Length: 393
Image 1 (spheres, rainbow, N blue to C red):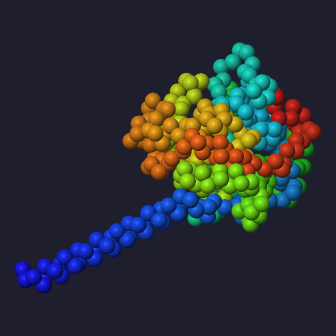
Image 2: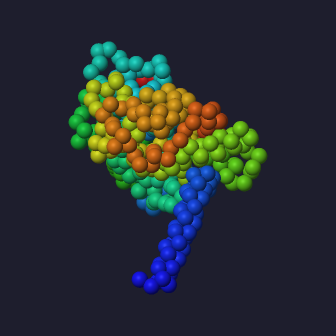
Image 3: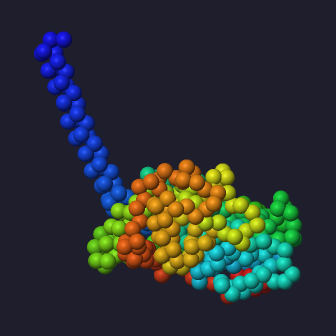
């Protein structure tokens, strides 16, 4: 090969090497920015969207509130939606796993009546606060009828979600009737109460019979009003740089630096995807909860209003935010707490996770800026069935 060609080839190689190094450095800078960039988070919108076939009205919301607190929806008339999603606990539950049918008492004082053959609810009760925004991310704003629900994403929309507990044996159905006829049985009960007939007619502006669809629509309309979106974090993201203290801003930076925002991002601080993390199972269950597609994967929960919704994770096994962050610290060090989950199963987004013990207290300070005290806590004085408001609390 002539010398000029050799030099030419060497020059090309040298140029490619330099360009490659520059590109690598640029990618490193972009990657670093994506980890630390606060723009991966956002404030909640000021308005809530409703499905076209279920516009929110005051009458519908008022009806939905009564239904939410009325045990008439449960098989043995002892459990309401509010039993496990009570305003005092941020519309969540203070137990690791809820006690539904055949229970009595509230919060940590709730226990089964004896004799009992009803199992615990198999997963921790998520808050209903802000579920009107489920599925909202920086990249997607789904229609309300497509909002992802539950730890395993098994249904979409608040309308469909509202009916699932009514059919669940341990949550609300009990032994009273079979799953296939549970919701129809509840509708017949409602139709037999004159006050509910009047309220449904008023809410839906006609004299059509009470139906399963309208039951779900009324419950969903009420649940869409349960919003806590004016946190100090929201104020900060809307431009008020005095809304957070210096420590809280440092906590925000530590949150971003650690990689938490890989999954906890957007307005709801959730990507609404399922991830396998090896969260410890709850030994109170008599079976393996294998999660989404039997992969031990569960949906990323919102980080909003955590002050009111302990304990945490789908199994309710982590009692405090300190324990949650220590779990992620262990995970970053390849310590997996679920015996059926191996490193090969762990979600790839965990790879860049680096939660340092020294940052935990700062991150908790930031997480506490995501609490909004001013959500609707109102409880009806009575319900049309005449049963105890909220169930056997």
